[in-house]
Length: 287
Ligand code: PAF
Image 1 (tube, helix red, strand yellow):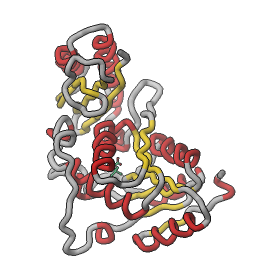
Image 2 (cartoon, helix red, strand yellow; image 1 turned 90 degrees about the horizontal axis):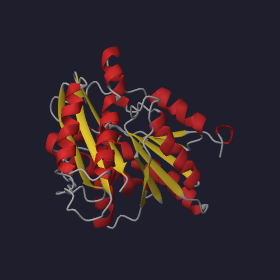
Image 3 (cartoon, protein in one colour; image 1 turned 90 degrees about the vertical axis):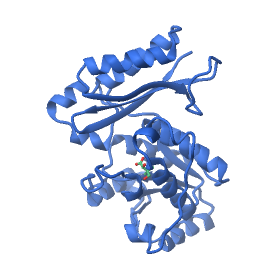
């Protein structure tokens, strides 16, 4: 459906969200959910497009989830502009924006959490303790609140996608999780709301993360040892101006375990700092 044929409703309570979804279901329509924290860019809009193509009705959620920010992280300053986001979603033909407040999601006395040990403890989980428990908790709530047919997540946050797939399978949540390709700037930098934090000089250096991941992937495709290729990638990234490299690591593309030499698909993932901005990215390895 194009923008001219739809209007974007905004709801803030779970009961209003469920009322809308109930109406669509009664009309025999399928529902797609696109969870976001706002500050929407073309990466998010590609998820909205995928949902508009794959389902009859698209609900975007906008909630800056305090539970996935650690101490000293950017919760307070995370970019928030609901009016601009809502306008952009309306123009693209999304049907519903669910934008709850913190008290709607976590009312007084809220005590439960969802954790996904193992896959949620490595890589990002090591550097951002508690992050995936925060993500898994809020995504479980959003999926149960809306009960969509499909939910759309970007491969930019590849480990998040793997954690959410594991969690929905483990908990028998009846929603199909759809992963969508990373959207990049023309110089290769993966789109992210946090790119807005980069200074002009940092922005020049930033595409090196994607380049190093490409080089690492092609070395591993050519037979290099995955662990050694990851270490060399981290060194190359430091040389190209990244102040600190958290990891460049080749992993099993589904479990994120260290490769065991079998012919399972692999992925190389990286996280590194430019000044106060932490960038993450990943790519598939052709084997
Ligand atoms: O990827 C994000 O923007 C967030 O982690 C998500 C999935 C919306 C949960 O808060």
